[in-house]
Image (cartoon, rainbow, N blue to C red; front, top):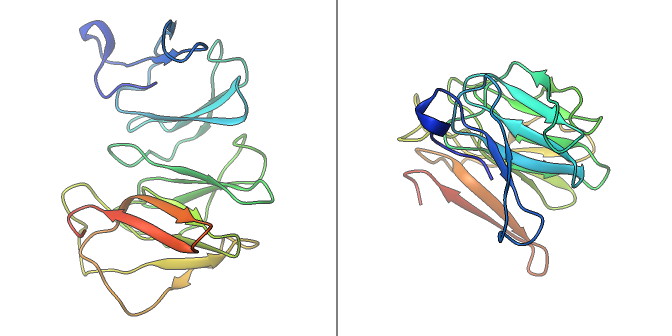
Length: 189
């Protein structure tokens, strides 16, 4: 569990962890990384990735006892989503770019279409990855649409179609039964 506000009226927020469905919580003290984060389990319950709005992305392999900074790229305001492809490639949104890791979050490459906004969500259907630029309060510049990349590539992104939206997704989901991708867009439905 991460926080949008600082702990004890200081400048940073920490992480809370529960191992019993939320009945009890373990406090993991904040690093010098500000507030307003997203956190994800990676390949185990002890390996986590946290995205921060002011200090990049950080990774722990020991449930938050120690942290290693893995990217200077900032997380988009309000929290981003993470997506693993079937081959284990990890994608997370960021300010101006999409981050891609082939080593479970130890290192990241910038792979998305560069934008002055950022990316909150990347989702896949087993064949293609989907995303669109987005920003809280409305994307800047001209209206934009969705981008796609082959899940086995993830570095070459092309326009999905000519449809445009004034703002992109905060979250996306894939319904594998009906083969439908859902997109909940900031200020665009």
